[in-house]
Image 1 (cartoon, rainbow, N blue to C red):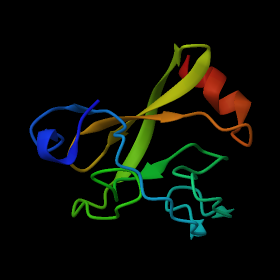
Image 2 (image 1 turned 90 degrees about the vertical axis):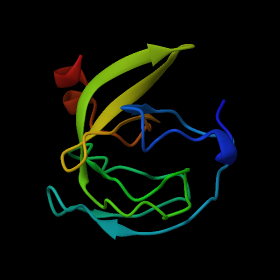
Image 3 (image 1 turned 60 degrees about the vertical axis):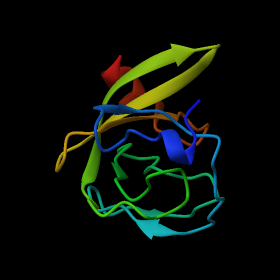
Image 4 (image 1 turned 90 degrees about the horizontal axis):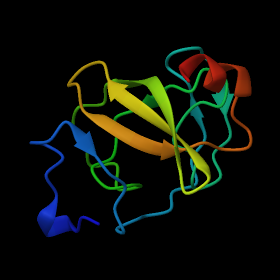
Length: 112
């Protein structure tokens, strides 16, 4: 698990969730499909098209300057849970995010 002092997000292509988490309950409009998303403090992607936005260095901090759209590129299963892999279409960084029960299962199937 990375810590703030060990972060290599800017140098590595795949960034992992950190134990440094700031819960932010925010609603947002998906910049890919336009869906109005009601955030619950853990929401980090659109449940309809599964796109995200590259806004965090560590989950919830909103310190990333890139602000590019994060395209869902694949799905993985880890410890019995499904995880989305997003790739930033602006800078190329990849991040892993847990699938939510509200997510569009048909879109998840397309990624597998």
